[in-house]
Image (cartoon, rainbow, N blue to C red; front, side, top):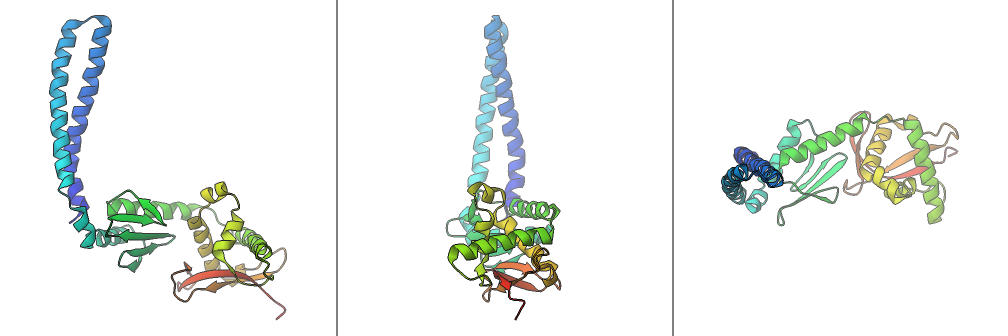
Length: 261
């Protein structure tokens, strides 16, 4: 099964649906105007026309409904067609895909396909779409938007270092201890409104760019303090990033380095 086949079948039916609905709106407007001006002759003609348009609309709705109902969404997901087409659509659009069996990462997005319930989640948020090409385009557009955003490693590191220090103080940990990046993020974007404008995905993307800049950029210029990242062994709980050499890594924690050692 392929959603694009359904989409091709719905396209002409959608045109008929739109035409019939527009005709009804046009005749309805004319009828009300005729009532206002007292043009009963034209009103009777328009009433006849709106009946025909209503019949056409009902027919178009039935055909559209029949085509949509014939598409077996349960089989589409259980047979793996949706997942395969999602991966293929991403690859066609130049979106790198990692993962399998319904769990995928198109950095900084994570997609979970729940075949049993025919649901798709992007970063834990349900997506109301069964069209793989649409989801792939949404991911591509999101990545492109993030890539175009200006980024200064030194400025981001300084803010990250401040949030790290706050995280240490709040948890009673010593300066230099490893802190989870997820906790640091909450102290970087303290207000709920700030987290809405600067979500976890944007944070992960900035972390990836800072990581890719290399250790020479992990030094706060004002203080000379060095920082480093801790990695995740299983690759499930960390944030996937690529180093300058293109090697895939999952970072999990952030900490200050004791340069005196």
